Length: 224
Image (cartoon, rainbow, N blue to C red; front, side, top):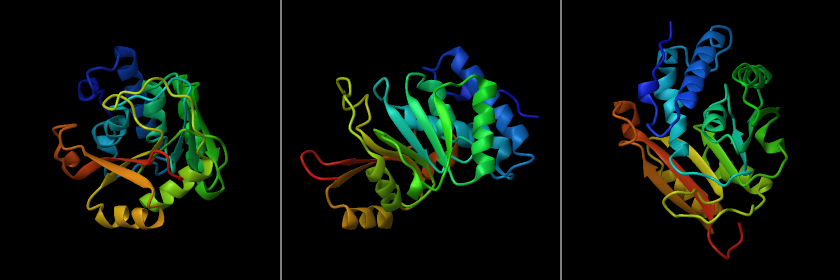
């Protein structure tokens, strides 16, 4: 039985948001018995190792009305946690596995989430217009940026604060040594910038010691 773990969530979240995240965790736990949405060996840590991990992408904000695509969303990670904490942002969860996209639809219905929909399609074939791409350990940076580049459409962002707002582009969760991934990205796309934010201070769990948030965006006045 999965126990609620609201104290694990960032303090700035509302009680309603924490409750909905707990409900999502319970749904993931139950559906995972039929479909492998989360590694069965780690499902007991679905809150601390998965949902809270995804919330690291919400350390900064994005503009209201922004459109976000989640590449390889699986069971809705990070799409659903972000939809809960960013209710005025429209999110599309892309995955090539139909069972997973149906699970995302189920979760959104059960949780009453109206700002997240699924798209059962391969990332290379997805269409739309998005200001942001997000991802959690889905693919190398060079692939993620190529997918983002193909569907990117600049928005009309509110006044940005460097420390509070993500730049339009790719924001993803990664782990381990990123040296080669960043090198490959720079070789193919020399006009992009990469910022790596360690998550070792995000949570006291040692799980985060080798985890990072990676921000990729186009340099000003240069082609993507």
